[in-house]
Image 1 (cartoon, one colour):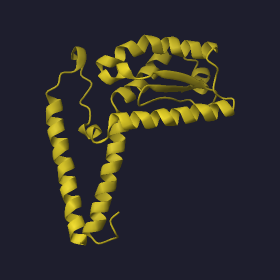
Image 2 (tube, rainbow, N blue to C red; image 1 turned 135 degrees about the vertical axis):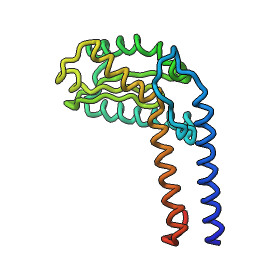
Image 3 (cartoon, rainbow, N blue to C red; image 1 turned 90 degrees about the horizontal axis):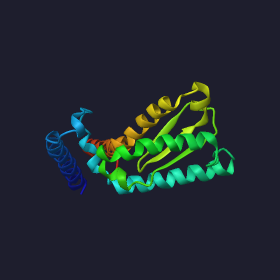
Image 4 (spheres, rainbow, N blue to C red; image 1 turned 120 degrees about the vertical axis):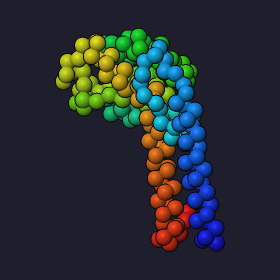
Amino acid sequence: MRRFFRWVLIARLLTVLSFISVSHAQQAKQQEPNGIEVGKQSPLRYLVPEEALEQEAEKQYSAMKAEAQKQHVLVPAGDLQVVRLRAIANRIIPHTARWNERASKWNWEINLFSSKQVNAFCMPGGKIAFFSGILTSLQLTDDEVAIVMGHEIAHALREHSREQAAKDSLLNLGTRLGASIFNLGDIG
C-alpha cells in the first residue's frame, strides 16, 4: 500500500511540473502592456485559485481592522491622513486593470493604522494598509506615498502571495514525497 501512495505522489509531482512548464511556455508568448517590460509572472501562481486567496485575504484584513478598532488604532475615515491616502489611491487604482484585469473587480480598500511601524502593504484583492509611522517618521510627500503605494499594489497585481502559497504547497508535497520515498514517516 505504501508503494502505491509513493507512486501517486510521484505522479502528482510530475503532473504539477508539466503544468508549470506548459503554463510558462504559453505566458512567454504574451505581450506586456504598453511595451513596458516588467518580467514574466511565475506560472506557479496557477496552482492556487485566485478567488480563494482573495477571499482569505479579505477575511484577514477584516479581522485586522476589527482588532485595530477594538484597540483604537484604526484611524477614522475623516482623518486628514486617511483622506490623503485614499485620494492618492484613487489616482492609482484606475490604472491597475491593465496589469491584472481582475483588479477592476476588486473591492479596493485603504486604511491607516496608528503605529510606529514604518510599513505598508497591499493584500490580494486590493486591501491596502499603511501604518502611520511610515508617514510621520519619513515625512513622505504625496509623490513618495504614491511610490510606496504603487510598489505595494504591484505585489498584489503580480500575485506574489499566490505564488508564495503555491511554493509552500509544492514544498509540502516535496517533503511528503521525500519522506515517503525514504520511508521516513506515514503519508497524510
